[in-house]
Length: 140
Ligand SMILES: [Zn+2]
Image 1 (cartoon, rainbow, N blue to C red):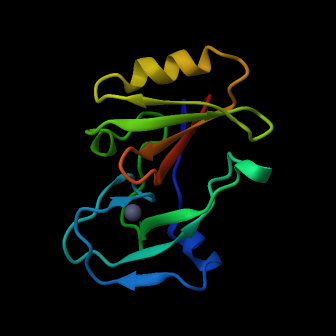
Image 2: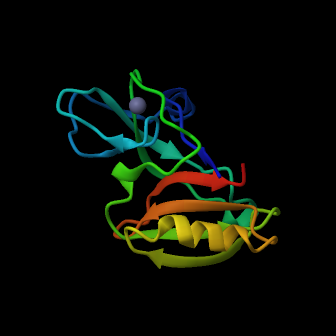
């Protein structure tokens, strides 16, 4: 699988982005971990690329202002998968195929099962409580 994170430069597309000098514990979509105290972050509107047309969505995400790390993009980021998450799958046209709630410890198996279906092109990982986009996955 290939993980798709969001670089801090994506914040530039939202003129209403908000600077936060410290917002500990928020999920960072750049390095795919939770933020630490005193790490400056952007909060901004972002539209994941997997949804098209009426399936295109905009929602709030956090990234670092300056990201100090580069995550491994060939395996799942464990720090963002310690709670139940929504896996929302999309076809190549960018339409929602299905959605399911997956528990910690079951993500690899669930994602492998989704990609066994050739009509699924990408999968979004989202929070269960707020529905916020965390990262996308495609086949490697
Ligand atoms: Zn980062």
